Image 1 (tube, rainbow, N blue to C red):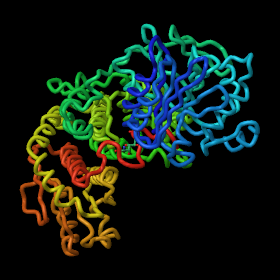
Image 2: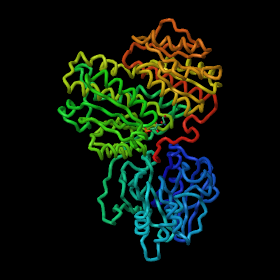
Image 3: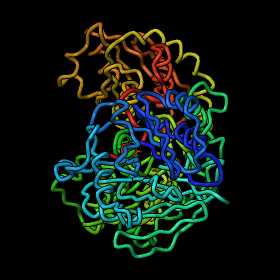
Image 4: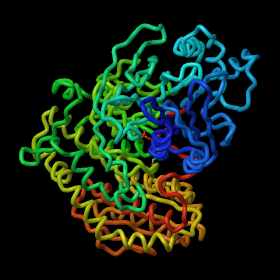
Length: 605
Ligand code: AGP
């Protein structure tokens, strides 16, 4: 998803702009650009492709200007190109934008004086601002007037040759953070671009505009009324956004799951007293006790974590009904929720547009919403009624791994707390609590023991074009997640199925162009799971079985994962799937951390 940076201070701005854009690369993009301004002119540089291409241009076009903005673009309107790259110019102003201007066509038809050079909605917004920017008009007033005519979502930063002492920023739906330095002010789409520059930040809210100068920031709303600034402390350290010796962020984030899961659990699970205590739910014990229905929403991996968590909620809380919905679907459905419903909103970035829109719809209906979020201070985290940060640390790789594990565990902890509020005795939840406590070390053991074995298997299957993942019960969401992990970074066409569904159609796919990943637990469903394998084997399948069972399994490869966990074993088996997707992609030579077409945080609908 697009990234925005900016700075105004006491030294040349370009180095921060380039450094900040590198930090935001993980969000996914296809072109990039920067502009610095002074009272005589501007240095505008744009390039299709990577930030490194842009960086090369800056070495050939040195700028000493102390104010500038930059952008990484994930194309929505207009193909990736230099012409469509931001910043866009109109008169004396330059604009970068994240979001979608929905009424850009009508606006464009009114802007007769501007000679358009791109197909973007952003250039229309730039021209609209310029149309209000007469000689006696302040930049912030021209921006305000333009935004009052704008329909859609935006995070924008604007600079002007006419007044190179400030950056005007505004947000409606696309996050923007203002970093407060000692003698400089920074702009960024997320906190990772501010680390090492400042720890003090203002998280802009929807409908707010800020005038950023090197000596301070003034906030106002679209009615030009002043708003008091809320300075918060950024709690991410530099190490969290560096590879720390790993070849890729994805491998780092897979391998750091024992530690990140320990921080997810820290201070929340008390094994001795067999208790779970989640702070921040903003629900009394009575309210927890009265919950009758839980609806879980999310997108992609967050949705699959929610689906896995739903099984655990049902197992933990007698009589509780649970449903799980893709946020992008639920927000348009004529859904009805029973009274005493609580909605769990799952999101790593806390900025996913579909999830945010669904959250707002649920709140509109008076549903109590709880966030299960990784990114601290994100929009969803600030709009839910209560919630729990999963504390997995910044997740940089587009493919979500450690967040999935921490989200599924956090939902399980929530289930234990609800069960206890409803009178569950220690023995009713002790198995879950013991397994939660042991999960980090079990994951550590899987990574240590099986990383090389999985890498070897992955190399042998990397040439396939198609794959089917399947599992029963709590392994069904894990099969879906394993297929998503593989498809989104290796581009192998992979699908996940409930094992019982194969014979109702998908098994027609099985031929030599396919391999299959069968997830099997050594539990009451073991024999049933074998029948699905037999059906696939009978049709010439190439099965990789991932299992915690030592029993005989007929498969081309059997990856035995030695774990004593039972209830949470699906989370342990998923670690092997994460490693499998990583090593297949490595064997194929693709970009593991920034796969084509994808963004880390999908802030457009
Ligand atoms: C998962 O690997 C993908 N990157 C994607 O499906 C992601 O999970 C989805 O876009 C939801 O993102 P969120 O958790 O930040 O809301």
